[in-house]
Amino acid sequence: MHALVTGGGGFLGRYIVEQLAARGDRLRCFGRGRYPALEALGVEVVRGDITDAAAVKAACAGIDGVFHVAALPGIGMDWRPYEQVNLRGTENVLRGCHAHGVSRLVYTSSPSVVFNGRDQHGVDETAPYDFAWMERHRAHYSRSKALAEQAVLAASDASLKTCALRPHLIWGPRDNHLIPRLIARARSGRLRRVGDGANLVDVVYVENAAAAHLQAADALAVPDSPVAGRAYFLSQGEPVNCWEWIDQILALADLPPVRKRISLRAARAIGAACEIVYAALGLKQEPPMTRFLAEQLARSHWFDVSAARRDFGYEPRISTAEGMQRLAAWLRSTKNGPRVCPPQPRPS
Ligand SMILES: NC(=O)c1ccc[n+]([C@@H]2O[C@H](COP(=O)([O-])OP(=O)(O)OC[C@H]3O[C@@H](n4cnc5c(N)ncnc54)[C@H](OP(=O)(O)O)[C@@H]3O)[C@@H](O)[C@H]2O)c1
Image (tube, rainbow, N blue to C red):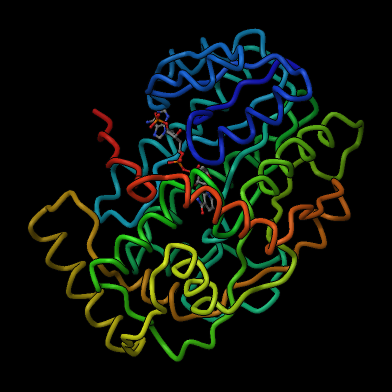
């Protein structure tokens, strides 16, 4: 297929691009930066902002399948950039697909679209969105991803088949978010275990998450595919203890386990105070704690991936142990430690 990958220069997007290139698909990427590594793979790189409807539409010309991976992540307190990039940007992608007769769209969503501050043990895709909770807790990222997911799934019809994938805590070599942040926080002594430390969470090795995107796109091409119009959780197939897993990652970076602790109640109170201060002062950077983050760090949230296995043959082929070895090798190869993704410019 001739595929367009938005955000193809990012952490997950680049693995999707590499896997598509390896099997010989023609590729175009859309993003704001320059991506020499993608150009070296023979990928056509189109520079543009996902909030620019005309640029997105032009990028969809001649494309069979779109992987819409680009998004603004994080826990910023201003709704506007999340609305512009994650929701309006996705609407631009849908319009581009319709304008150019694209037949398949795989949207990278997030399990946080159904997070509601409660423990989630093995929940499946019947879990509802809780927009009221997300709004009350200023969970702008989750809310924007949920609204975008809804729009993508509602758009699925005979001419454009769509689906949404919800990978949880993607990790692996070249991670520019989670692992560098954990390491930086641990090095500065600012990492604290939130809650009782017993919470289980799902994680997914990046190459497994990328492979699922290709499998879902291929499944969408099959007539009467059950994948069309559906969302799917993705994980390693079994949850890990959140804090033991963090300690394992820190050990790979020669750092001691997390020793400082804070109760969920205290973290929630600090988060609420941070939110008020950051919102009142109009601060653009992310607060160190929010109520959403406190709940995410202390609660269990893991998911049933049997629908992905059943409908498009998802299998986490790279085990967590193997992934950890690959991550360790990458951490050893990065001289001054992994780099955090720089703050993204705000849309105009
Ligand atoms: N990492 C996780 O644990 C996780 C978990 C669940 C879901 N996800 C989802 O997975 C997807 C990929 O995330 P990631 O972890 O790979 O993050 P990432 O490395 O930050 O990738 C995000 C990509 O989006 C692009 N992008 C952001 N704003 C843009 C804009 N205004 N216009 C055009 N492109 C823009 C970025 O490209 P430029 O900055 O170069 O333009 C970047 O390539 C996202 O949809 C995210 O919501 C991630």
